[in-house]
Amino acid sequence: MTDTCKVLMIFPLFNANSFWNYQEACDLAGARYPAAPLGLITVAALLPENWEVRLVNRNTEHLDEADFAWADIVMTGGMLPQRNDALHIIEMCHAHDKPVVVGGPDVTSSPALYDAANFQVLGEAEEIMVDFIAAWRKGDRQGVFEAPMGKTDVTKSPLPRFDLLKLDQYLHVGVQFSRGCPFSCEFCDIIELYGRVPRTKTNAQVMAELDALYALGYRGHVDFVDDNLIGNKKALKKFLPDLKRWQDEKNFPFEFSTEASINLADDPDLLRSLSDTNFFAIFVGIESPDTDSLVLMQKKQNTRRSLQQSIETIHKAGIFVNAGFIVGFDSEKGSVAGGMIECIEDTSIPVCMVGLLYALPTTQLTRRLLAEGRLFSGSEQTQSGDQCTAGLNFATKRPRRDVLNDYRTVLAAIYEPVAYFGRVRRLGRMLGRKRAHRMIKGDLRSFFRLMFRIHRAGPGTAGQFWRMMLDCVLHNPRALPYVVMTSALYLHLGPFSRQVIAEIDGEIADVDQGRWHAPPVMHPVAAEPVPA
View 1 (cartoon, rainbow, N blue to C red):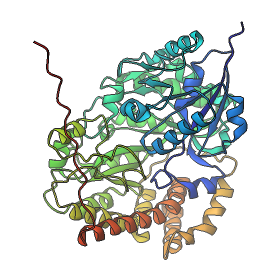
View 2 (cartoon, one colour; view 1 turned 90 degrees about the vertical axis):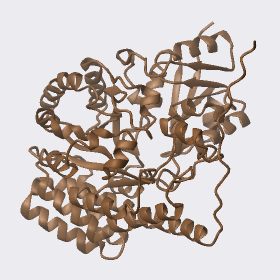
View 3 (cartoon, rainbow, N blue to C red; view 1 turned 180 degrees about the vertical axis):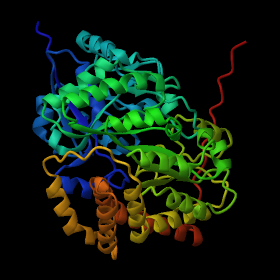
């Protein structure tokens, strides 16, 4: 008997009400969604070669009856902001009488919510897909397969099936060098899911992934999706020279972005190597300028340095910083809005993901709030947006209204056009790009679209944009492509911030008028008594 199977992989919709849904920026570039689904195409590479695989990304294309009719089995899953659609996909599979497998970080964190699926793959897939495949071949049509957290040998991770992607649908494509993070931030689930000992792929593995993308004709932005690229500095320093040689040989077809901790600024050699290899952007979790908050959340690495000096050092190396900030920590003694706005302005970071604190399912924070009787029940069931609109799923130490008001104050200040483009202008002057941006197909078209659409982002925006552009032309023309990128994001961030502010104002009004009542809190499950 021939072992064949038709696998329909479905990437669920992200909630539309999300900071990361840069639809306007995608439209400028002729793309449909920012990032490609790296997890699913990695799982696809773990399947037997003679199994047929079809990928449908619900964020970029339509899922129709013919897809279900073709499939023998459906695989889906993803992150917390995809939960609503992932659960909907499971229902669709049952309606079409198709067995469904779910995996990814959200099902791993909250498996009970996905009980309706036929199969659950919990944890990293590399070690346990072989067990699932054996069970499927044996005739099993349900089961749970679980990998120990943070133990998978990523040197055995396969080359992702980039051939399954419609590459022109995305602003950027992802690759991964390492998993895990050495820090232990209380609110973060990375260390729970992937461990505190960063595990790295071999240099040859990553070069093979870049070769595959290059051979498919892809050029432009590649995102290293690592939880903290510099988590294992020793391995990274051995990898970057190989990456630099590859870029040199291919005439620098890629520009890279990633996520890293702020201590990157302490290592000038590493920073220089990243810049020489053509990294142009990093996301840094700053969270709060308040030292007490950083200590309480166990993010002490951010207290040992001047944030302003660290960010300036990174900018001068030619890499611009996007940052995360959070409002709602227990340690906030009073209003934090002024200090946060000052920090954002002083560091000249245009793109700041400011969110309300959210207790994720598998974190130290959630366990503490549960033990203290402060974690709301019911919040784990649905997701309406992301941390910008769905945070504070617990009883706050400060009055809830004050936390909400601080949050809306920060958003209103930093995404006002004068403030935003002022930061872009200062970034443009600082950004020490040594290498000129490689023009790729569509760059000029995107710029002309931006010129015609910038006035739609709100009153006064166009004037601030052109003032910033002129300043960059006069003082640092090599930074132009990057200030244009950052300006394009404002087409999303300006309107999005105003939408979030309106929602928060509604929440504040509910509190003021007595319409908001704290949900019941969850109680720790008592341990079963041990029989005598």
